[in-house]
Image (cartoon, rainbow, N blue to C red):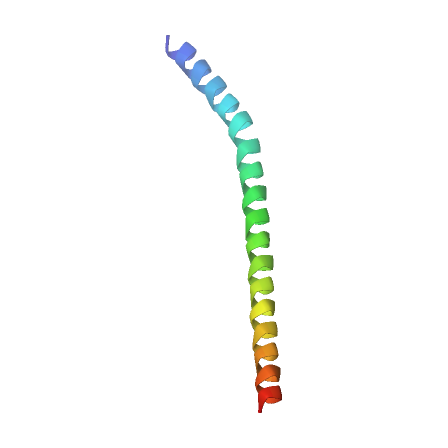
Length: 64
């Protein structure tokens, strides 16, 4: 009975690793993609703010 339990535990561990490893890899890939997208979005936001500030400054110079 003990050897059967050990065998079952070994099979379960192997099956779990076979299932979880690809899921972990895909999860990491998705996380990296999300982080990259957030970085790009942040840079775009900074660019928009800088462009708006520059436009505002030019408008104020024109009005003056």
